[in-house]
Length: 536
Image (tube, rainbow, N blue to C red; front, top):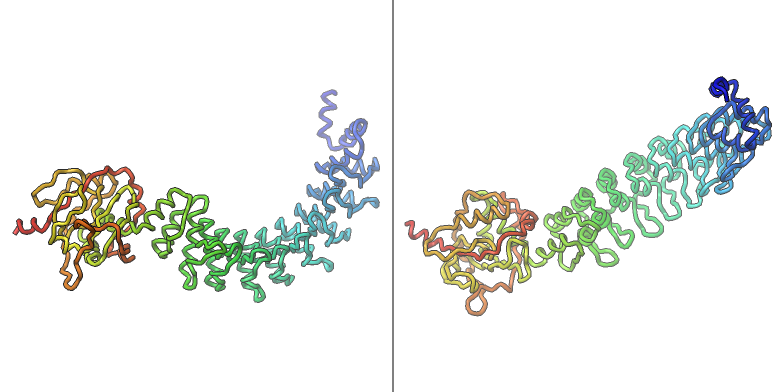
């Protein structure tokens, strides 16, 4: 082909001549379909008017040239095709029975939809793939102008159902187009409580997809049922919102619309079960702060929300810690396969968490902040971690029933501990708290060992640990002892939860559990009463 002939490809007037050459090699049917798909207006005009090609010829999937033109949004080609008297404007494809109007509504071309609906009087209620009407397609894709054209047609059924009983409003709520939802609910008075095959209302879909503005439109409708249950699992919109994790929707349903926070859905799950299982911490806090929320609610398998928080694929320790420490959830009878969560539960179920709080308070608290109050609180309390506690900070604890009483007796704690008097300053010391050193007759407090512990644990050193304990007359100071005078470490009475927040000391056992490599060092007990007498 010469250079002059090559340049003629860009000349609009020569395109029909090019197609004449192509027709020698390809069928007119294939050429017309390709021209309609790619938007070649002159070629389509030549094939339809000059060559009298079949405008209803079907290509792949049973699409006619009009299907392709509508799907691709080529308005001029649509007019050429539909103006032919032989053109079938209601042709259906082979697979889904979709018509050209379905394709036009799906693509969102307003001019084509107007032309087919108003000028060519196409059926606005025809059903195609999955039983979708043109309105279903427009709502699903969010084409507001197309929706208005269809719904303003006098024969349009705005409540048409597809094969799954989904209505156009269901599709609009799923896509989240606020204008379409407002138009259908307010202008066209669509049923806001219509249920699909599985019993989902439009509110279920909006909550599941997290469309807050759509949720507000629906719930503000006077006829909207905010507590509607689906057909299979009895899930309510609040269950879907807690599962999807939209905080605004949950706040709106719980606080503004007073939805039931204890309603049970699939498997007996409450909204709190859903939020814990999905790992939505903020939603957990919203629900548990509700006055009527049952944080110990059990599902059909007797699982509580804490079970769900621990046994999700990746346990959210923020949720677990919040439920246990802040809300006081019961950890007994709960098992988990997550290693981190299992260690956490091991501490709580062995009552060792109280011991961790004491140690953390003594090691990290500023001088005088909460320590005296803590000791006074513990004067009447016996603490025990149980024989199985292993946290990396404490292996074996000394049960202290009375600081003051122990200061008056020589109590043999274990064979590894030096026989010394315990004074008022003595607190739940473990084998790993102080470094190895020979017993000293001097009554001085071991500062270097504490510095070593702080350095190992990565904990800031306190400037002082000196404290005094006020007199506690009338308190039974008799220690609980086992045979041979040893302090009993087999019995315990749990420390009151107030120890978690004494004075201004912030108790966070999670930071203690992180220090797992503290050396195994036997403890040394210091008699501070003798020190006081020497000072005097």
